[in-house]
Length: 150
Length: 180
Image (cartoon, rainbow over all chains, first blue to last red; front, side, top):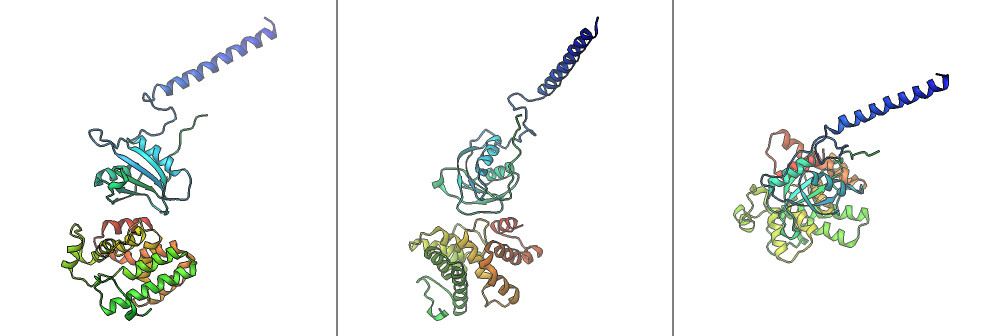
């Protein structure tokens, strides 16, 4: 076998080894993922939906000057089982996140505050708003890292 | 305006000393409003919240509980909510003014600007005897940095209560947390 044939054979073998390694690496990680979860999802989401699957309706208001926080918070809350029915901007800005109980369910507000990584729970009954909770996103809230899809 | 010129709502119950305090709070709020060049509507809201916030401060506990029977708050915290209820019954519809008055004693992290101004002016008005220099300094610089002044007032107003182990109203505790 001449020099050219040896080079071709060696190249093919090296390519085969690299390809096999890549395939095995990917399949190893994919088998560890729970069904239905994106491969780039971070830690498993803690379930905060109350027992019985009660539907908790939420409006999310951005109380900062940072654009897009209400949308990011909506994703977080939906991941935790809350039914976000509206988003918007609060006329006033706040430093910290507040969860307002609109229908008297303080424990639901506490769950939402927990899902947001902390926040004050306040009783503010208001049946005119047609939601169980109002979440006011404060400037100290940092949205979780988004999945990265290269 | 002097205390004798203050006209409270007909249901108001405030001693001469209280009226003098109310006038000083309103004067400070108006001074800040002028320094900031506020629009007429917001200036009026600041002034009216100040003028009415203690309208029932000298009412008796039974009188206050009769107005807000659903509140199980301590007697000293009832005059704000009671005044807000009476003002709303009289037709006052500005949520900003009503909320400022309702929460001016406990405080709340949900204060808008009117609420913050009343909370600050109530504490910084020059008639109070304690920490005069510090309060005058904060009051004079408040228009330059309202949020900063508000944080200072909240911390100053609540630090001793917290250190003494006093049990705080949930809204007060949340307000404290909000400025940390």
